[in-house]
Image (cartoon, rainbow over all chains, first blue to last red; front, top):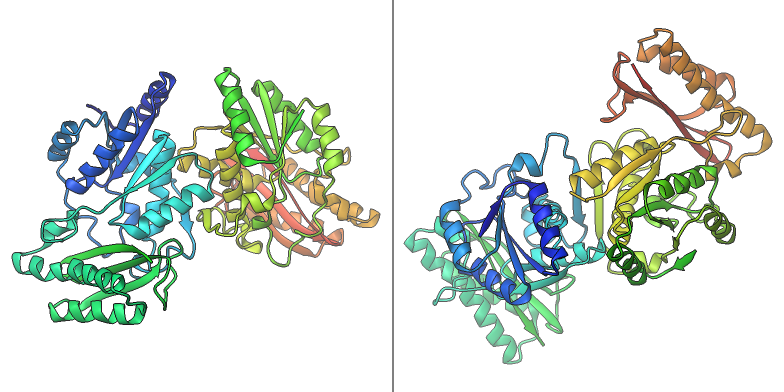
Length: 281
Length: 281
């Protein structure tokens, strides 16, 4: 596995691989890799001849009172894991290179980015869109892979790349979970044993919602209320949102119909956790 | 000369030209071509093997009370002129293709875009950035050419393409003028004979400013005042701005030093006219 820190060397590597007829897949991450990231790597290897994983904790997507400084980092471990999964290039640009002093450009997807996580994290998705467009422009991959765990992010990035006529295929990979259902996240490490136990209510309420809908429930309000009750019963009181929305436009539904996204964000201890399921009705 | 209306056919044409080792230059325009545009075409032909000119009156960059509906259009004449200058492809996408109903993405260059023309045309440069990024992503040129007449636009687009790591060379071509100094613009056609005569004060005041600076004047304030007086004496009262700014950061100067942009925007009759000069001190 090659490790590349410079933007120009990264682009040259890609150009050279492409000139030899190779297809490239990009997996953009903030590092501190878990099985979720590795599943993206594995899928990427199936989809392309060469796999680039970027690790960049993007300051632009953290709010001033968020966890940029304390976001977990372990590049040594990440390197080992990425190599083991057959990653060809680990791209690790510096913030100074990505955002030189005179950097001013912002990319946003209006409407989609002000709801759900965007409502409590102003500027977050602008930061995500901007960095992902930069990474895609640098690596010039045929395919880019995102995780369904960050559902809104995947919807926004897909739209951004389509709107801007970026010629890249987007693959969204399923959320990976612990055995008991907890969605994998680098932020799970903020949880104490007790907090981890209450956190379980998030995925459990989502599974219960799916079961209700499969059983015929069509009221989005009743689903929202059931989830909120389940969270509250398990000691989760700081709920950012419980959303039942159209999976593409992220617009709140009253009747459950079509391609539906049910998403939750809540604070458990020091962690802000998100999770979601998609149900097609 | 080939005329292409579809986004996909345009991309395929570019890819095919590039696969045959050809370099491509893109000249994005809103049509109604004048000598200024044609000078960009000529320069493009010197810089690349194949030249694509896009003609697209971009609704996104017009304000609700601006002249989108009446902006002059003459595709037949444009076609003849472009062909005569050896343009290889005229790219004429439709608004429906460029902005499908679910389009939501915006690209902006904060700071640079809220001053000068941006102050009186909110959203204008966001529209310009967004469409140019789309055009560059579709055509994938090696080189893109802009005119110095739209000085702020050129500064913003250069920064946007650099910030987003778009691998394209930017060339900014000099403003073309009528014999008497009036900067060429598609909007000059809005002027009556009398209005055209007062409009001359814009370029003349800029030339006078240059002369003063070359003669040793270093006070930006005195330059601004001189220009305003010249405009007012010639019956131009609706002045949007008279700016003496750093040519790269567009920050107002008090002392004239370095790479200086002197720019004017004013309304003459039904037309909003802009012009500028650059002076290196």
